[in-house]
Length: 361
Image (tube, rainbow, N blue to C red; front, side):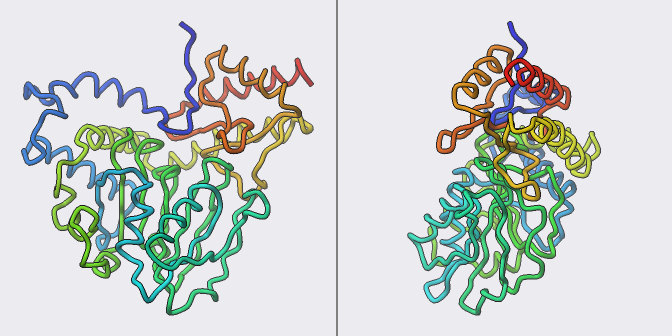
């Protein structure tokens, strides 16, 4: 069997040591005779997993004491609606920064629930850059600012977030959580599906300032209320126990490697390997994102023509490189270098790209 080098954009690889430990204990957790997914979510055995995952997220991301950590379901996509349901009253408007498909989808869902304005957008440039945000456009009517920190389809990423805005900032960090530090002084809430950097699909991580939580809408069905989930420590209903267990193992793994700072260093090292091939290819490979906006999680590029691109993807797949196709909406190629992608896999892909270029330039 050909060795597989998994560069899928999500769900993405889970660290090999995490899979090994899960195989050893997940189906007979602490010799209880029960698999993790069989336990009562009210039992002390599961609660140990639950609170360990919460506490390790707090530690790794240096979450201040005045923030709440929640485990929810429905993916980041449900958060598009929950954010507006909880924080967008009738007499206010939400300001969205549009940097790609996911931020557009977030704004579209919010529009069905209230007034939405576009604070900034890079659409006219095919989402190749991160737009400048003019905070003077933020008024008393602005309920919150929403942005997407990393754009998986177009391969751009915010290098820093707006400083000291006058209203809450809410960030979808689904594709770069646990790969970078978070400036909590400038961020009131983040949310992220776990399946790229924080575990497996099924659980969504939400971290929000308690003062923001207190302002949430009181007149919602409990299942859609952040206040309700926070009051029950994310145990209002049965949580995705297996997914939270995997997140607890992933946070263990990151902590053992040196924390988020080490993930951030490795993210840059891995991304730089692929960008160096693109930049040194004399146009054989053409990156989509402008250099100052390049993502360290998703590297997007095209080849000189469509036939060559198809051949590249075919040969890559036959060699064991999985998930290099660009998103169906834009085409091209995409290399996703999330936390669990080993450095040596990226080195092998770099070598493959260089060899293919030499043979076909």
